[in-house]
Image (cartoon, rainbow, N blue to C red; front, side):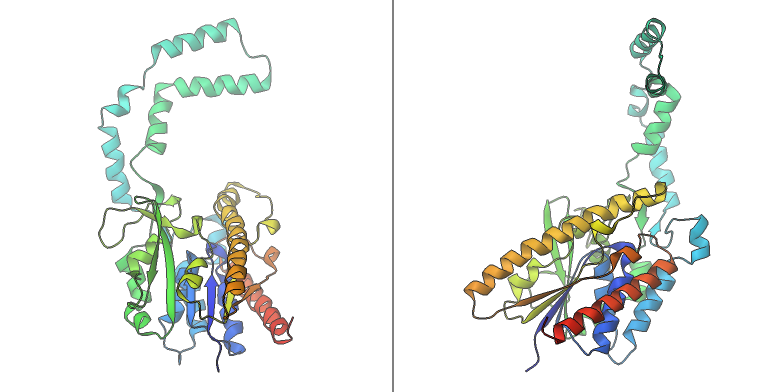
Length: 365
């Protein structure tokens, strides 16, 4: 009798190649999964993969999709390290919001602070800076009181936008590449998550209407990928509620498996980053990427550890024992850049790490 297996595809953006490589290894070894539980970029992998007919070369299609539609050529990325394919600027929308701020009376209400400026001048005359740290502080304090600098700071930080950019449009991009009708016809169950910032709760979406969750669609996929600070918070189905990626709270999305599928035999976990192997950032771009990714790394470790305790308790009480297989990768060989070289390296790392784990599994280790 075939084992009932689930796979968890974690969030981790630019190291999505690891999940593609892992799926490639599973296909080669003819290990199939009945359930896919996904978060953030893992949702893209899981949804796209299961929206393709099984007779198609799904790994090649997955590789091609991420290479052509998500990641950037190395030579382009080298001097323009911004993923303009995914994090798109809506220039007309941004200009409109900027103009709203410019004509808003409150923008100018506190621009001029004469009393603060007088206090600053007297303090500067009476106690001029004598050390470099004091000089830098004095310059910063002066700029903070300068009306022009205050005006520019508002235009940069206080325009009514929840993110630097938008995420690619649902209808213009997602529906073009992911066949949701085919996804719902799949005999595989796919879960994705998103965090409802308005209702302060995690929400689960699924491609199977027999379960009491909302349907996966393009908006849900976008909502579950809305990276705080980078992208504006998305809505789902035209509602007002604002979402961000569920990976900020549940990077691996494991709990839903035990809640809904206590008849599982195995859960395989593909965690795609490790905080212990993060290198110090060399520039502001790397700092921004690490700043987003590092919490996911630690959250996923905590999620897996906590879930292992819950699973152990379940196995102690139940006759049906569920085995968890946590796949270890050589994470130090990948980074957080959105270029083809990193995608290729991720696929290689995911493929080799998963093959090694499958061999250990087959040998009873």
